[in-house]
Length: 399
Image (cartoon, rainbow, N blue to C red; front, top):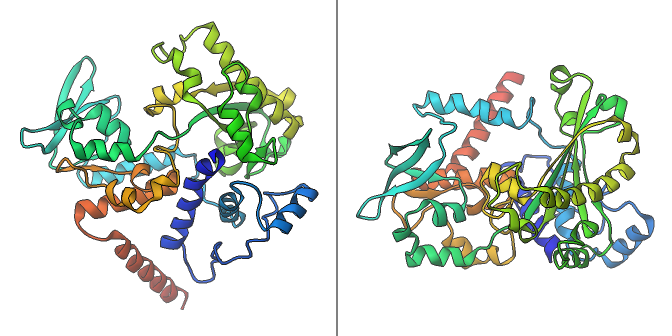
């Protein structure tokens, strides 16, 4: 079950992105492909592959993961210069439209008037608080932060707000590990690929056992790892950081294991916290060095992040990295019809993962659905016409 929850959002978001924006002529729909053919990167052990072929499926979340892997078999996009380039290139567009992007100005609360309508936000500037007024407030802070932290208490108590909150749950928290290496991707044999390492064949049972672990034994029971190499994916990396490489590793973790230190300041949580964090690092590194034995004497930096790290740096309430839980219950008709960009507070809208699905594609679709609600216009139709126009222009140029 836990493995299904982890993969469901990513798989469905990618499938949705293909269906809505990527169904170009000649593209292969993963849902009509032979489901009995496991993608090569997913199942490599011969006996396991035979069992999958015989059964038509693998235990637990194989179908979901198959969709995810199938998506990447034909390649994926990566921003030149890294993910920060998305923000850097978006800011000028916002400013050209008359907007402004503020940094180091955390939102303290959403302003709501006596009629119950949102009319701006209050932000912190140094030691002072500044009110910024706007006819429309769009929150990408997530449903829990928006309703439970940013809305004034009076409006949090609205029946409609509480009804929406009762329909969703916090997503699974994440533990991250970043490894800095001496050497280029060619020297270290690193590729622009994503790897998913499983320590057990029965992934569902492994996750159940993992999340039922005590804090003392949790690190020894990590069931799976995601490994990516951003430096190998970025064509500009070598120019910016010659002779250097990085690996990114992600896995799931329970917020409750780290909750004891939630009130402590970042980097000052004490020896016990650091020791507990190190137990995860050591367990993960044991697997990484089996997969990449050639990097052992090339490691220059290891930096780890716990669910509390996520709380501090990205503002997730309980260390989650994919927003609200991507569970089967969240996909029920009543939930999807209720948790929409429009909120019970007039002029306040939700955007991002929590109004669609987890992951980057889910966040993009969340933005499109939200913008359509604000503008009262179906932007998906606009995109379809834009795609046709671009194709027509392309054909004219080729002719």
